[in-house]
Amino acid sequence: MSLLGWGPNELLVDNSIYARRDHPIVEARWQESTEAGQLILVVPMLMEVLYSARSGRAAQQELEDLKAAYEFEVIDEDIWQLAIQTQVELAQVGRGHQRRFSLTDLLTAALAHRHGYGVLHYDADYDHIRQDSGLQYQSIWAAQPPSLDSSPEPDADARALRKSLRLLLGTLDDTDDAHLLSELFDSLRAQVLEAGLDPPPRLPAGK
Picture (cartoon, one colour):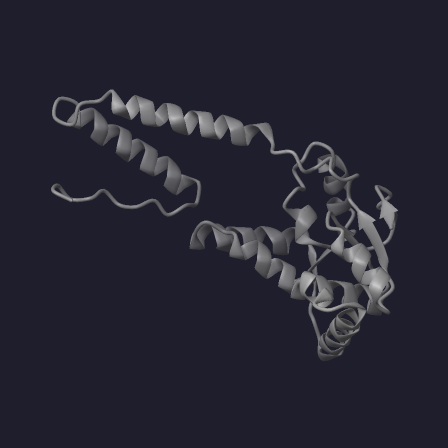
C-alpha cells in the first residue's frame, strides 16, 4: 500500500476519492493532478458518478464536465475476463469473500494490473484485492484514513437552514399570507431550477 505519495504515474480514480475530491485535505493535490492529466476515469466509475445525479440536466452537465477534465479508459474483453478470473480467485480465499468487492472495483483493479496504472482511492478493498489475488498494481490512498470520514460542516449548516425554513413557513397563515407564500415558492423554485435540479410544480388549489 502506498499512502499519500500520489507520485508521477497515471492513476485510475475510484469513486471513493472522487466523491471526496473537494475535501480540504486533498483538494489542492487533486487539482494539481487533474491539471497535469494524471487522473484517469474508467467507464463503470463514470456511471457510478452519474447514478448520483439529482436530475437529467445535472447528469448531462456532470458528464460534459468530466469529459472536459479527464481521460477515460474503456473496459475491453480481456479486462472483463481478467476481472472474472479475479473474482473466482477471491472466492477461493474464503466463503463469500468475493462478495465484498464491487464490479467497478474488480474492473478498475484488473485494468490497473494490465496497463501498469496505479489506483487512487479511499477504500481498503483495493488493498485486499491486491493482497488476495494475482493482480498487482500500486494501491494509493489519497489520504490517511479516517481523515476524510468526518461529515463536512456545510452538511450541518444545510440541516440547520432547512429546519429554520420549516419554522419560518410555520409562522405564516395560509389565508392572510397567501401572496407572500406564493412569492416565496416561486423564488425558491427558480433558484432550484438554476441549480440544475427538477423541483415539483405548484400544486393546484385543493390538493
